[in-house]
Image (cartoon, rainbow, N blue to C red; front, side, top):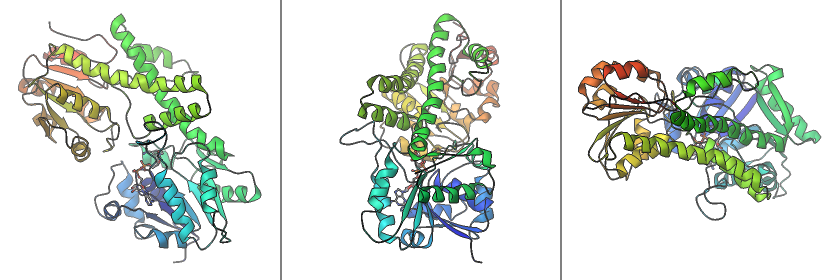
Amino acid sequence: MTFEKHILCIGAGYVGGPTMAMIAFKCPRYKVTVVDINPGRIAEWNSDHLPIYEPGLDEIVRATRGKNLFFSTDIEKGIRESEIIFVSVNTPTKTFGAGAGMAADLQYWDKTARQIRTYATSNKIIVEKSTLPVKTAQAMKRILTSEANGIRFDVLSNPEFLAEGTAVRDLEKPDRVLIGSTQTPNGLRARDVLVEIYANWVSKDRIITSNIWSSELSKLVANAFLAQRVSSINSISALCEKADADIEEVARAVGMDSRVGGRFLNASVGFGGSCFKKDILNLVYLCRYYDLKEVADYWEGVVKINDYQKDRFLLKILDALFNTLADKRICLFGFAFKADTGDTRESPAIFVARQLIEEKARVVITDPKALKNAMKDMEGVAGDIAYVEDPYVACEGCTAIAVMTEWRTYAALDYERIYRTMAKPAFIFDGRNILDHRKLFEIGFNVFPIGKPSLTHF
Ligand SMILES: NC(=O)c1ccc[n+]([C@@H]2O[C@H](COP(=O)([O-])OP(=O)(O)OC[C@H]3O[C@@H](n4cnc5c(N)ncnc54)[C@H](O)[C@@H]3O)[C@@H](O)[C@H]2O)c1
């Protein structure tokens, strides 16, 4: 079969894999290849056990793999054969040198640009899928065109707004697709090529275009706004606990104002995930770079409140368990940073588990999808840590349960059965407010939700 377009994606991660699977699924006339420097990851994409868990992903990969979707380590061939190249490599926070702990580490990005320049033999449209600091497209263009080899590279920005756990749904029915380009005739032509790809399944009114810097910046700002809502409600949860108010009642009353809206107002132990913190810090760094101190401090506050919320949760456990956790078994319900994913990057559970071990507690971790990642995250932490798949078994002999992830299955467990097997007095710290607190209290638990009065038998 001859394909109408050859699309390449460099980076087969949480973004590259699902986004390309969706393009292949919706556009059978295009050949889509995903490459990565990590051969293990590519082997997993080619196996029955995909490297990431996303509801609905197995089905679309199964429907397309080997037909018009291919996973490979041959980056050179991939670059040569494609006319459109998405770049979806990781852009973590820098851990060294200038801007350490804040700025984006662009080494993978830079290397990819050089690889493209080395292997390209024809004109290419390069699409930034990774989340990047504003003005990265300019750097990319400079690297690509630094050798006068007569090849034209048009760089577009097309940030990805999918949320892990709902990636397939988000990709199939996106709120919007954003495409930023330079406003030159070549830039606009490249933009239109990308618009046409998405128009295979996304209605045109949801495909928005902008200048390239606005597009790059919009992704950072979108994540900053989302995280800001979480930190806003979490900051008020602390006040609710002091003032005998109930955060869910407050959130409902506030969220029903159509100017505010009710979504993303769930108080919790704090946000996690690979993006929110890194992207806000990146924004903060950019503001500092441009000498906008007040703006930088404002956004940094979102990360500070998140750290504060995680600290508060841990201190609440310590305080409720009579100021000593030594030798007490504490079960963490969930380790993923959110439900419906196995991803644990920046999960609040990592922080809580490590702090519990510092306090000499014995930690039992259970999670339906994230135990493998949890083991990696806790590698090298000296202490008593167990990983147990079955939550009923995990709780046996524990003094406390801390709900870290809002997996629906935890709300449906038989807590009378669980209570019987736990040490007494038994405690539940609901870091996601997903359980029936009154019922748990009646069973005999001492219950500590977020942003609501605790229910104790003392
Ligand atoms: N995870 C999300 O929910 C999400 C959502 C929107 C945007 N993003 C952004 O998308 C980008 C990718 O995120 P991710 O979560 O998919 O990261 P990831 O770490 O899961 O995947 C990145 C992949 O790129 C590969 N890679 C790195 N350098 C390479 C190179 N030179 N050649 C080939 N492959 C290379 C890595 O081996 C890795 O498999 C980041 O910038 C992130 O901020 C992520």
